[in-house]
Length: 313
Image (cartoon, rainbow, N blue to C red; front, side, top):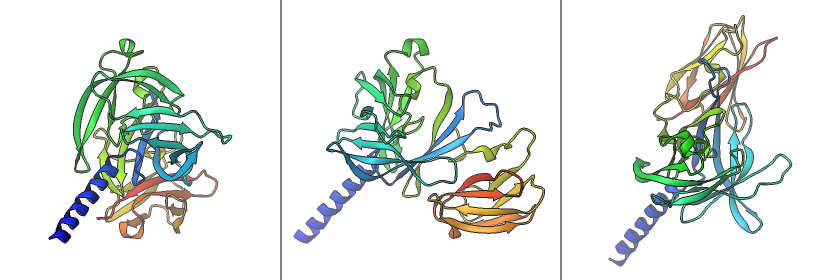
């Protein structure tokens, strides 16, 4: 009987630990996908990009422990270290930005998931044009994500809300962050920003746990539109995500081309020459789960790049 009780208590403790980890914003099992485009860019916009973010590895800066912030921009490159993040047990999240010269910004309080309606916080995000302000929680709600209830926080700037209007607020989800993007908290506190950014999706160990209802994909890039005015070259993967068998078709090229497919870490997964007009078969079992990148190369032209999502059943 003691063994059964001990096993039950251990199982409950483990489940609670996993749930707590899943609620944590800085959990290293997450990957965030953020859509980026200039404001007013006409459709089809030639400047669409998607950036992925994740937190991985521990480090100590001036006796304070942080996780590393890694970014993967819309190109064939490896994850880049761009800053550091820490989260307190109470749900406060602090960011430090890493500059190109190797120095870091001051630590800024960028999230506080412990706020109650009417509470204020001094907000300071070093990643968003080093923007700081005093904000107030105007409404608190809940939503179901990853089989658990999450807080949904609606916040307004005390400085800009009269100019922007009472409907101009920013939405945070506990463990997910700002719906403008994980590092763009504060974007909607300032009504004069000059670009459009939004959180597309969040994956937890390759399982989709958040999807933006206003978009039908977890990533977008310039291959969703002509590369140059008058250039009708396109590369389309359909269906996307790749869950079983999908096809890559390139149109608008004058002849054969070289196709290369890479993992997020730039490992070459496939390399072959493709005849003009040929559809390339993509099988989910042949690629690692997550985002894969492709590059189409033809003589005397700039490479065409894109990516697709692999989700195994």
